Image (tube, rainbow, N blue to C red; front, side, top):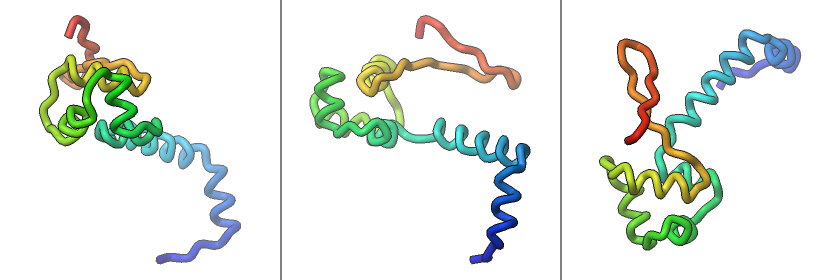
Length: 101
């Protein structure tokens, strides 16, 4: 591991370009978590989420281990953690929010 001088670290921490890049990377990481990590991030157990989503704990476990979701199940799950599900499509490099799905 490379060692850094404290003065260099302090100086680099004041760099607005570096700060912007760090924030951008951090926000990208937040949006790339799976649903189990989302549940854990809000501090819920599977049993607590199951109660909030009107599911069984087994259904929550199954949902967290799937790769293909029903939108209705995913909407209930996200709602139970206090969120709102939005579906976007990327068409020709532009993000399009889909309504009615």
